Length: 222
Length: 222
Image (tube, rainbow over all chains, first blue to last red; front, side, top):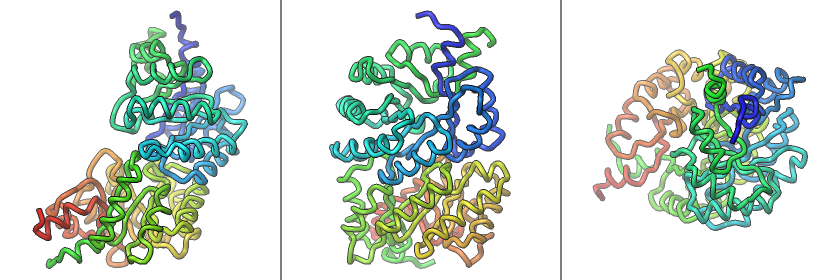
């Protein structure tokens, strides 16, 4: 697989979601997203309007997260938050699946939760974050199928806030289920080129992470 | 300090907020809250309606959390989620402070965020969760003062989802600021009587935790 720095950057949502992210920190991520030509900067909802204003005209999208990171909100709240973010200019919306409903085998609730958000923001790119670290193989398979049925655009492997890193085998499993019909995003706290390339090989076509170090590494800057 | 099992139980919000909490698990916490006469069961928003239905007539309240655990949502979404939970029957609402705004010294935003939720649910007991593990001593002092000004009922020390446990010195600091005017709740993953008693001594008058082991210990059951 041949990969250039720009191709790599255009596959990364440059992500900063820590609770204590202040204006200085989010501004750094926003300007890095522009400078490195990342696909988007991914910020918490209260930073969306700021990021949209600063990235206007650059072609770099703003992503955000909904019901994050537990996914344990009511569906009404997830819809409201998604619409609120989309109306503020977020082009890409990552909602967290209801893991408790998955664990309860209440798949109707899992589906309806996603479907309601999908219907609320038909024009956004909708990603569903399934918390693979909490799920069995079978639960990952069912969750991926539900996401496809509900019309999401891509499936993401992790919030980065759970107990474990994204496993390559989980990324490969999601890819096996969705085939080429949907995007697969790997996210978490990986911070080097080697991890990134392995995730692409496993089946990811997009990464959610802090991307500067990774792109600098492929560019030979570090 | 003399403390009976019932007095202890009535100071505890019996809490289960893990993302993967299924119906079986939440039902166990709900029935324990009734059996042990905890002040409330504290569950994620999507479990509120279930807990309210099951605890009807028992005198045990249902608590929930808003913008949890990052507090990085827009204020509009926090208000909507709080109203949604209150209308579903949650009597006690714990919202997470905007830690990023605290870190940015943007105290107007911190205040307005809390004030908007307070105005949205005037009849609920409103607790603000400040993530002490992320804050300096000065930031804890300012946050506590803002909470008082915004008319909250109590201040809680931690989401239990951050990097560190609640420190006794942080609980004491919050108590020093709010005096006897507001409640102080200590929360986190402490699970024994000794920790609970130390938190009370430091200034807490309420605990948010999984309470069964603690009450069993004072009752001599374990």
